[in-house]
Structure formats: structure tokens, C-alpha cells
Image (cartoon, rainbow, N blue to C red; front, side):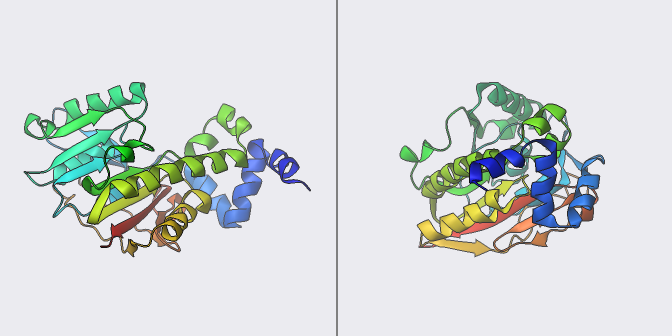
Length: 275
């Protein structure tokens, strides 16, 4: 069977089921069932007028990015802003955070999150911009000590919850997204300073959007070090939620909802740039 015909056969709800059944085997049924439950939300209180609610798996990923020695920090795909709040809450007093979002509409949501949820003293050190992260490296090479890249992804949980998106699903979407993720990751790597840390994350299930993107970085650059994603940032002063455990993958960590009380899916991988 030709690849084009195989992809056509795999499209829509039936193809979606078949594709992820091949990835997870019998476990796919429990993952799919967990998607129908309410996500495990954490309330993040950053000191502003409002609290912010986000998946506890997202919190677990974001608090893995070390900021101890970071002066210049970048959140590359930042909207709607939950991870920006986590970084802003934990950055040093002399540090600055640049939060970027390519979509003008989503950038406005990000701005509102920053204004509503952060105290003014912290807002002053957070700059929100609207640029294409895949080409930002051209003007910002080796400019940041810490970078968080929460890349656009398949977001299967949302696909499964929307009949329209589910009917339009096909493996070609995963391939297209993985190419965009690679463009963002390679750009982010060029913007990272030596000894800096980069956290790559998605809410996708497929290795093609997760470990495979990291593997491509390892093949392209010889200064990449994979790090164990320990909890590096304070979170207990900002949320009372317990953070979920993760499962190890070849290069990173995966939080899957069937074994994490509904949290996730959330893949993350912590990288360090060696000299």
C-alpha cells in the first residue's frame, strides 16, 4: 500500500484510534478513557489580581527549567501564559523575561494573563512580543540563559473532544507539526548561551513530536546534553496542588493521564548547552 493511501485510510476518528492503538497497544483504551475525565488543574497564585489555572503536568514541566543563574529568560511560544507566570514567579530580582507569541490574537491573551496575574513589580520585568520564533535566532543568537519552548502540537486530548477536528485528523498533521517543532527548537538552541538550559515540551502523545525532535537536535548539534528534569523552581508558595509523576522516555519525560490522575499528556525534555 502506498504511503498516501495508507494515510488516507488512517484519517478521521477510525484512523486516529488505529494510529494511537499502534503506539500504545492495549494501554490506549485507558489513556482514551482518561481523556474524558476533567484534567488535573493547578491554581497558580503569582501575586496579581487573579489566579491562573493550568494542567498540573504543565506546572511539573515548567518548574524543571533551572533559573538560578539566569539573567535573560525566554518563553518562546508563551500564550496563553501559564508557564510565563511560573517563570516570572521564580526568576531572580535582576532577571528579565521575554515572552513571545506568534499569533497576534493569542499575544493579546498572553498580555492579559501577565497584567491580571502578576504583581506590577514583576510585570515591569516581563516583555511580551509577537514574532515568529522559528526565525528569532537571526537577531538573537546566544542571547538567553534559559529558554522554555512549549511547542504547538497535536494536542490529542483536544482533538478527541472535538468532532470536527477528529474527523479532519490525519498522520500528515503530525508530520507537519514535527517540522514546525524542529524549526522552533533549532532556532531556540541557537538563541541559548553556553551553559544555558532549554526545556522543550508538548502536550502530544506521538514520539514523532517528542523524542524524535530531540533526537534530531542531538544529530545536528554536538553541544547538546540531556539532563534529568528535577524540580528546580519553587512551586509550593504559588500552588497547593501536588505535581504528577512522569514516565521516562528515550530522552525525556512523559506525563500520561491514565497514570497521573488526569494530568497531561505532557512531554518534556531538559537540555543544557555545553561549551
